Length: 62
Image (cartoon, rainbow, N blue to C red; front, side, top):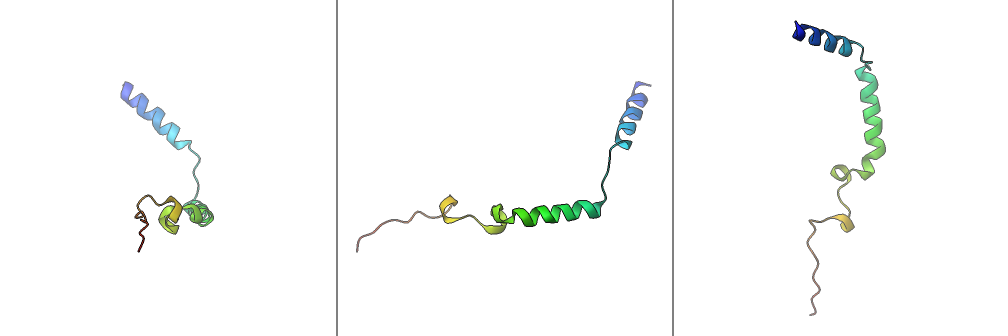
């Protein structure tokens, strides 16, 4: 009986959640991605200053 009461309370709580349309959220997500793509390392790639994987340049005298 306790399980049924807990399940009912959970379902009521989930039913009261305010939801948004997928079309609205997807537009917001696209706008966010466009606005922040310059700071995204996966899109723009790391700068030479902040690239920990770049090989260190050695100085050699010829």
